[in-house]
Figure 1 (tube, helix red, strand yellow):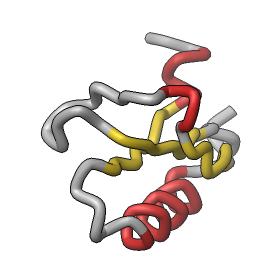
Figure 2: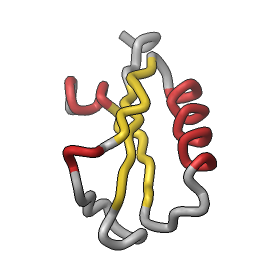
Figure 3: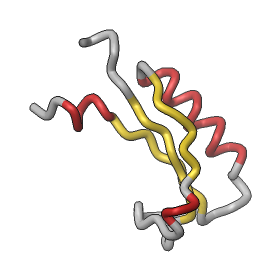
Figure 4: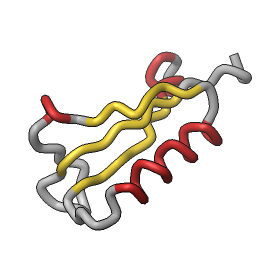
Length: 71
């Protein structure tokens, strides 16, 4: 399992850039699911940099492996 730590990268408009209160959830941009943090981080960085001019767009990395096997 240690080699397959799934991560989800998605983003969208937030009500406040200091929160994770996504608005218009039907329009979230799902970048993808990645097998490790390095690939997820690279995807997050690319998506975030592509939207750097929009202060209300935020991308996040979700550690799916932590949700599937909480300790």
